[in-house]
Every structure is written in C-alpha cells, then in structure tokens.
Image (tube, rainbow, N blue to C red; front, side, top):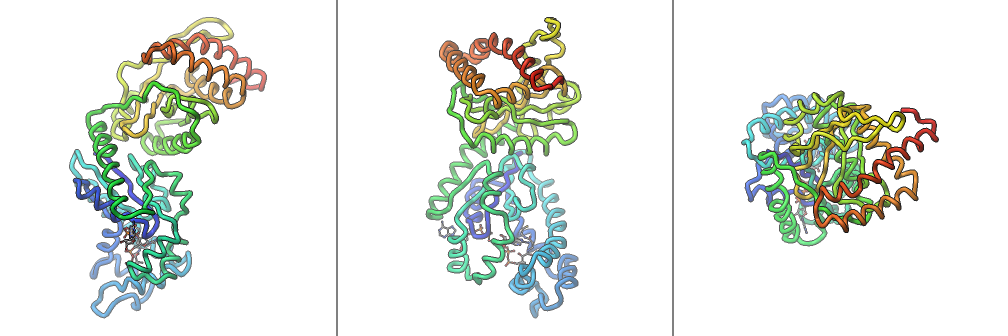
Length: 398
Ligand SMILES: CC(C)(COP(=O)(O)OP(=O)(O)OC[C@H]1O[C@@H](n2cnc3c(N)ncnc32)[C@H](O)[C@@H]1O)[C@@H](O)C(=O)NCCC(=O)NCCS
Ligand SMILES: Nc1ncnc2c1ncn2[C@@H]1O[C@H](COP(=O)(O)OP(=O)(O)OP(=O)(O)O)[C@@H](O)[C@H]1O
C-alpha cells in the first residue's frame, strides 16, 4: 500500500492527473468530494455552517448554496478560518474511514487541494504537484469554468505559494501545455514510479542507487529537507535527531546521487523495533549491514567495534535513491557522520581532496560498490583524526 498526495493550486489541473491515475487502478480519496458529502442536507456539517454563516447560504431546496458560501467565506481570513474549522475535522474523519477500507495493495491517490497549506506533505509516501502559473489558472477558471475572476483570485491568495509547493514536491507536473500532454506525463509517473514503489513497499525491497558520481545539484538540499520531515512523520518520537548527512548535504561537492539521512535513536534495539514501521513508511531495511568500519579512538588508539553498530534502510522509491542510517545517538559513528559533513562544509581544501579521492576510488572500483567504499577507507581513517583536531580547534569537545 502506498499513499500519494496529489495537489496544486485551484485550476492547476489536478482533476486530469487524478483521472489518469484512477483510470489505471488508483484508489481515489477525493477531498473536494468528501467536502461536499459532509455538508449534505441533514448533516451536522451543514447545520454548523448555517449556524456560523446564516440561512442565506442555503438554497431554496435546503441544499448548500456553494457560491453564496464562497462569497462570504473567502472575503477575509477570519471567515475562511471559520469555514475551515467546521469542515476540516469532518473531512479528516471521513478520509480516515476511506483509508481504513483500502486494500493491502492499494495505490491510494489522495487528491487534496490544501495539502501544502495544512502541512500534511510529510505524511505521504510521495507528493505530486500539478503546476501552472497563477495568471493562466485564472484565465482557465474564468473562461472554462465560469468562475468569477474575483473569486478565483481570492482563493489563490488564500492558498500556498508556488515556492511552498515546490519545496514539498517529489514530482512536479507542468500543465502549461495541453491536457493530453499532462495526461501522458501523469501516465509515466504511474507506470514508472507509483506501481514499482508500491510493489517494493509490499515486498520490502530497498532500491539501491547507481554507483556513479554526479555534479553537485542544488536540489539535493531540498530533497534532504523533505526526507528529514518525512522520516520524522514515520518514526516520531523514537528518534532524537534526524539529519541530512553525506556528500549530498555539502553544497558544491560531487556525490553519488543518493541522499543519505541519519536517524539517531537511543540504541540499536530501538532501531530494530522500527524495522516494520520504516518499511511501511517506504524505507525497507537493507539486510546484512550491522555496522560501520570501526575507527581507532584518536586519544587512546583503541578500537571498540561495539560502538560502531548501525542499521541501514533505503527508500523503496525507484525515482529517488535514499539511504537511511540508524545509529545510536552520541555513538562515535553517529557523531562522525555529522562532523564529517560539517567539516567538509567548512573546509574547501578538504572538499577538493575528498572529491579527488572519490573520482580515483570510482576509477579503480570497476563498478564494485564494496571496492569503491574500501578504496576510500584509508583516507577516512585519516579524516577521523583530522576532524578531531578541527573540532578541538573550534573548542568543540563533544
Ligand atoms: C466554500 C465552498 C462551499 C465553495 O464551493 P465550490 O463548489 O465553489 O468549490 P469547491 O468545493 O469545488 O472547491 C474548489 C476549489 O476551491 C479551493 N478551496 C476550497 N475551499 C478552500 C479553502 N477553505 N481555502 C482555500 N481554498 C479553498 C480549492 O482549490 C478547491 O479545489 C467549498 O469550497 C467548501 O466547502 N470549502 C471548505 C472545505 C475545504 O476546505 N475544501 C477544500 C479542501 S479539503
Ligand atoms: N492543459 C490545459 N489546457 C487548457 N485548459 C486546461 C488544461 N488543464 C486543465 N484545463 C482546464 O482548466 C480548468 C481547471 O482544471 P481542473 O479542473 O483540472 O483543475 P483542478 O486542479 O482539478 O481544479 P480544482 O482546484 O478546482 O479542483 C478546467 O476547466 C480544465 O478543463
């Protein structure tokens, strides 16, 4: 089972994308439709709305006069918040009932206009955003749907900005072309991403990223933030910290195009107890990884293998490679991951050295991931000591 959040500003074209997914077997949970159900005649929802906005929002036959309510509700923040406070809890409860009824292997498409506004993006395995510039949306809404321009603009003003939507988008679908072009793009997302992602979650199959080096991509930081937020939603208070680590967290550094995230837990028994929770959340365990390469304590020279344990999970999403390292908070391996990132962010010469090492290790690894890692190891041992000195120089004695 996978939950996909589908959203976009009013008039962006969500309906076209939802239809493409549903025609292919998606399990549709449509927030706009639920929003209509919970205010049908005779419902507590409609009673609460008339209490709040007056009988003028009712049509002669006792149904909700939607344009009349829209005219009252979208005039100012206070009125809109009154509308939301009545409708959103009812929509939430009905949504949960529909989710509970979904089959084991469902690809659930939650079509939610206010997904970004309500800060729910981290609770989905994947967020798909449909986008068109606001002016074009106003044109389509007024021309094809007959919506008054002032109403279209008032709703747009009450919704998230494009930038806020971009920040949470795992998939960004541009609808500035024809509806047919949008449907083709959505069909590709369905076949190439949603279907295999769902199957991988059910079969507990982690996706391993390619062994290549890519130029630094400014998008990695945003992806890191999205993944950190999503992992907080998955593991909740079982983690004490969640950090974007590794080369993709260092601006300007070449990297394997796999985002590394560290989840700090009290100890590895907590990590083991999270195995299924993480798998259901889209991050199945990578079997056979029990620890990092242990390094000698810089002060004493002794090696304590027990301190270097970890569990590795990876994303089941075929569209984005992610490693999730679970380490004990405060363990040497856990601290090193964060210190190494911060040292590289701080020291341009170290960054260059590391980039050169990566290129060389990749050249000699001959496509073998273990050889690639082993090729970097001696430099890492040395870096571990250098970082201790770098931290001491900054007065950091952790
Ligand atoms: C005020 C109502 C009756 C107007 O009905 P109308 O038929 O004109 O619009 P409809 O419900 O089809 O919504 C169309 C679009 O308007 C925008 N919109 C609707 N409600 C809101 C809101 N509270 N805030 C911002 N935008 C909204 C969304 O983009 C939505 O897709 C209706 O929108 C409503 O009951 N809204 C409150 C419930 C809600 O928040 N629904 C949307 C997300 S769950
Ligand atoms: N690519 C396109 N070119 C021209 N018109 C389009 C295109 N995509 C959608 N439209 C039209 O624009 C209007 C808004 O599209 P649609 O209803 O799919 O948006 P939506 O995101 O589902 O809207 P809402 O937020 O109201 O649910 C509709 O009249 C639709 O027919």
